[in-house]
Each structure stands twice: as C-alpha cells, then as structure tokens.
Image 1 (cartoon, rainbow, N blue to C red):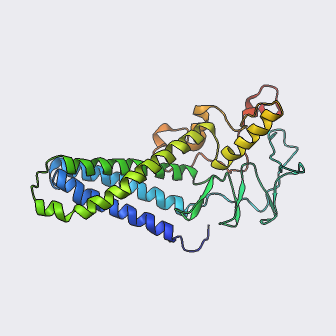
Image 2 (cartoon, rainbow, N blue to C red):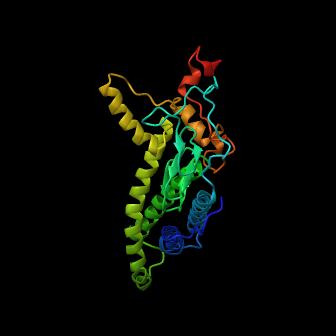
Length: 284
C-alpha cells in the first residue's frame, strides 16, 4: 500500500514511549534490583528484550501491512448458491455500494474516511498506528497489543521490585538520580497497563464472537430492532469459540504468538453459520 509518511505525531509518541520504557526497565529497574551483569539481571534483561523486540516488530508490521483493499473488479454474485449472505443497505434493500470509491462493498467491508478507501473486514482506524485495522493486519494488531500488555506489566513488576526490595547496589545517590525516571515510568506504566489490558480483553471477546468493533456496534442496534419486532438477532459470522479463534489466529496453535497470516483468505467472502446448516445451498 502506498501511503504518505507513517511517522505521524501519534506514532512518534508510541515509539518514544516504547524506547523510554525499554531503557528504563533494563538500565534502571533491572540494574537497581539485580545488577545488570548478574545472572538474574542478564536473564531478565534478555527475556524483556525478547518481549520488546516482538512488540516493536509487530507494531511495525501492523503499521506497514495493508489492511485489505477491495479489488476494482469485485462484483457480488447474487446467484452464487455458496454465498447466501449478502449485506444490503439499511434503506432501499440494494447491495452495499460505496459512492466515494465507486465500488461494491464485500461483506464486512467499510469505508474509512481517514484512509479515504474501503477496507476489508474493517475493525477501526487506529491513530496510534496511522493505519486501519482490517482483514490483513488484524491478527498482527492483536499480537502487538498482547506483547505490549506483557511488556508493560513486566516492566511495572520490575519497577515495584526495584523500589521495595533492597538493592545489591546500595548507592543512595544513584537511587536519587533515578527518581525522575521512576516517577515518569510509573505515570506511564500504570494507566497504560490498565488501558491496554482492557483493550486486549475487549478484542479477545470480539475474536471469540467473530465480530469487529463496527459489527459489535451494528449488532447492538440490530438486536434492539429485532427485539421490537419479536425476533432474536444472531450474528451470522459466529461459528463457535474455537472456530472463531482459528479464523483469526490460524489453525496452528504454535503460530498464535507470531504474526503469521498465511491462513487468511481473500477477505471478499467469509464463512457463516448458515454454511453448516444441512440442506442450505452453501452446505451442498
């Protein structure tokens, strides 16, 4: 995907925060608690570095990976017996068509006003990545948030430990010179751990339901409308918890912690709960 500079203000803030947390954790918290060149100090430094590298690499991949664009040749086949779910406009009953892109919208695709194009299985536009989160980079985004949570909590534990436990480096002057680092780190790590932890839990819930953030919001409205009409709303892409998990994270559990996306398909059609209903056209 050809875009302008990805180094926006928000991305710069994230990179600066990551660099500060890493340097303070390794060269202050670990050094003050264990001594950086001791065996436990080196072990913690190596482990935290691995987590930090995974966090940074997934962040970079999420930024530079195209979330998925609609092919110019895409036209929904309403007569396809294997694709019985076609999303329509809220009014008029026509197939979803983007006037700005002059393209039909595949199921689960939405137009992003920031990127000025339609994105496949769009979840949301993330200002902290200066990119949309969609079909092709959703798993990468989720893995990044997971490693970010682990890094923040790990750093916070080391911060608390280095303060409360008597340091082998009994140097009061050194501890005083690091006071500003401890204060800034605490102000960053505590709210960040809480916010990212909630964010990770929220997206894990969405994965278990096989929903995007947009679909969750639309589902709430659809549920209210269905209740007024005496019906029960059912999300068509909910295949069950395990099937929902592997549809996003992949069929190989060993690959779940890594940003592999070979399992994803075109993003123009998604398996639905109706595909497994005996006698339905899609199940034949």
